[in-house]
Length: 54
Image (cartoon, rainbow, N blue to C red; front, side):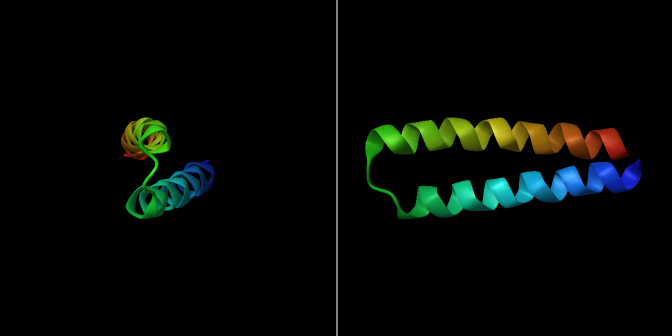
């Protein structure tokens, strides 16, 4: 079961890394706002996942 949660955490980290890279390289304001919202969502999700395995 722990392996399952670790896989999910790695998946979330990859998503966050992709969002972060996109945020650093985009200039479209509307898309940036959507990505920031998405980044915040996955950041909170990662925190919840980390708490769950402790």
